[in-house]
Length: 194
Image (cartoon, rainbow, N blue to C red; front, side, top):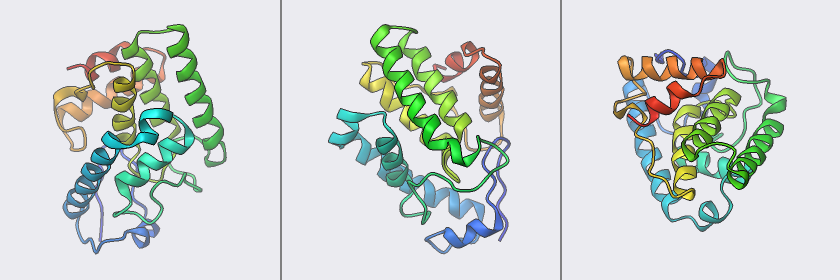
């Protein structure tokens, strides 16, 4: 079995296949299965009292990932313990996620940035940290939309296309993420609101 990931996606390593819960033989089957699992996670997040009262924290971010992928991956909701080709060193994940959550609370309390920029900075840093073995972008986008809801804002549309597949929407998303890597978050804000 071979998986083909679009540019910027976390590669699925051969040893990761053993952690799949369902019997999957193709990338398309994995995509469909994950999408159904993510839809369940989205419904859970919409009604979770814990998410409404405590988000974002390390605990609620891990819980969100677990709900999004618990029927797909055995390690759903657990920070990775391996190095990947993207993301920070695994031993620094908990520290950096805590720092990010603290920063977000500060930014909101002090009006450091607009709500959209707070959300985008949160999204960008969460993707940059890459706390999980897989599903980081999808998790970060849903987490960002939850954060926007807590701030009384409409969710982002994320380019109004399919980010998970190769094409112009994903290319624009990756380009905007790279600009944010260099300190320019404006492209990512514009992309997320189109």
